[in-house]
Length: 210
Image 1 (cartoon, helix red, strand yellow):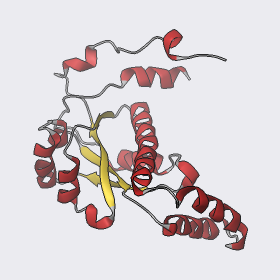
Image 2 (cartoon, rainbow, N blue to C red):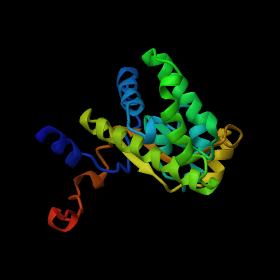
Image 3 (cartoon, helix red, strand yellow):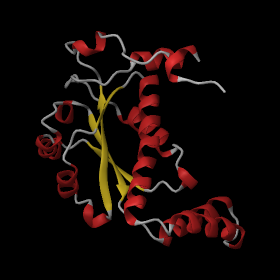
């Protein structure tokens, strides 16, 4: 427990990455697997994740990310894209996977299928978009925590032109929407922000025990 608290204290939103250091393929796969194992509502994972290493593509994304240097200097850029909307196929596809993975029948999951559809299908499209975007942040938080435990730096980025990302990455055609970006890599020794004390509310103000 002390180790994870130490790792979370070590973590900060890295402003300058060391351009000479890359996250190796084995560590990257660990991060992606941790992200895949993240919780999501009903287990539906209503998003897709793009892992971007290509330099030319990142140069295109930088101007529409308020020219933040992390986009081009980090080892990799990860774009979390939520589903804009969905129909019954979202539930059906998930339950097909459940049936195949657990070796059970579709009849065995029909009740769960009906329950999920009753809760989700009637939502207006804007609520569907909001709900899927919230699921993305569960995966984002998990990735960042695991990265910290591996001493891999991260910087979550919401400061970007959403529609431009969708256009550059061709997301609209796939019914996806870029909701948050994460740069990963290793901090530059010249990044002064790493030495600043964390500014957080004390637990007495943040938590209420009932």
